[in-house]
Length: 314
Image (cartoon, rainbow, N blue to C red; front, side, top):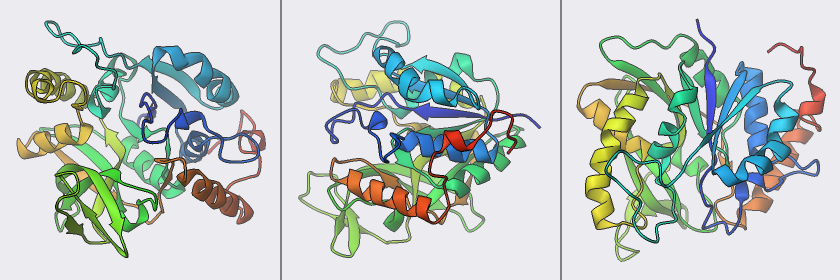
């Protein structure tokens, strides 16, 4: 048994939100969403975290998060840079947008050599998700295939009332294995239902409420890094030519490719929890209310990290 690592993707620009949402407090104590995820991860057993950030944000993250959790969790930083590309490639002129989740995870390869979980910094996942993925990763081993896992959420538990969201739409076999995941970058509520568009809203395709979606809570072994390296060069040769300023290297796309080629299988571990996040500024009050209600119910202590001692065991 090994001790899994938690990897947090926090280098996104937050363009739809309009600011650095990863560090925007959601309670009266100044906690941010990632505090609650880290607290849940700690209770599940995680003792090491790697933050993937922009280099210029290290001091902000260290001041707001790193300093207070170091008594409990070993903290490291990896940097996602536009210029970190394979030999022979340079960033397109005027490109500012990060390369996407696949590139983000690849940026921490030198810091992670054991099974690890990946999460977004600005999403609330729920306590059960961390317990489930920690159990899986504690015994994860590759054989003739790579063996990964994904926490699956019901679509209707992951939508916002204030605009579109990007979700990985999953096809799951009767035995609970992921057969494919397709990134849909514009999913919206439409009355009591949800639908996605791929042509700027000219046409919409409905999605059932119970569709299983990925919220980028994955469980990997280090073998994923090799696949990410190999596929990144292919992505740069193709997608960047078509959309040089905004093309993104999506982590789910690489996973799907590995499934299709029989190089990996992915166990889908379903979560009953409701997602909360701050895709848009209007979402913040929804998150604040939800956190306050969970504290009132005793699901979290009033003062998260002050409620623990460094010697406390899971």
